[in-house]
Image 1: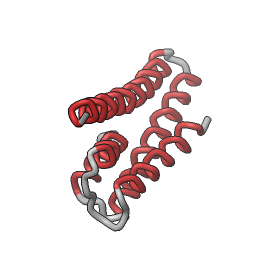
Image 2 (image 1 turned 30 degrees about the vertical axis):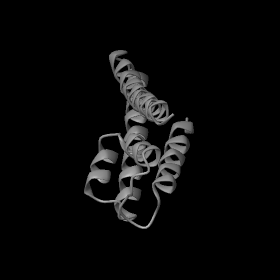
Image 3 (image 1 turned 180 degrees about the vertical axis):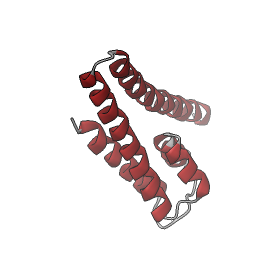
Image 4 (image 1 turned 45 degrees about the horizontal axis):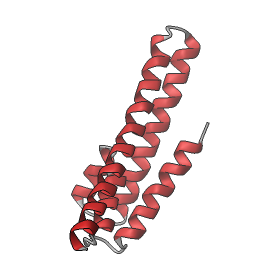
Length: 120
């Protein structure tokens, strides 16, 4: 059934949105909690957390820009929404700018996230 398939895709897209931003928000909350400790160790841990987040978003943004995916995709990467952008284009079979397919762009974005999130 086409309506069921569309509803399933919409649910998948919504879940991807939620997971992406929950991950981003929890990273920021952890950094803020480190700052609230008021100790040199807490401040240092906060700086590490925010630096890792910045490097992750920066790497996604740079990869998006250098692969020619366009200004909107690059803006999505800056705002932490690149996984959502790529999931949307892959799920709804939308074309992307640049030389890569939507599925390849999603794979690259997820690879960058997994590598950056696995760092200590």
